[in-house]
Figure (spheres, rainbow, N blue to C red):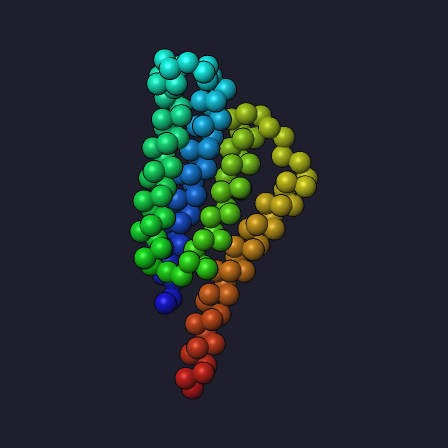
Length: 128
């Protein structure tokens, strides 16, 4: 099955939702007291749960449009979004080793996506 562009886009949107959910979890955890009222009224944690749920729905829909071996590795872009979000919202420092890691993740995702396109080219050449 050829992986469709819309499936790749949905997976990327999914990673943005789930990464945002993790940031909301952290915000909620920073305010969390372990008593029932604090847990029930912690809107950041509930927002995170909602975003995770939406991300799961998008992921399931995206999986219908392509190969799992192409789509699932794109989820690693979550590390990129969480790192950038953590730097912005929590003033966490992005060290040079983290930037190198982000760069390698992006390169890996591009290799997988380009490899998918190359696979289709090779199949076409075999027909000739």
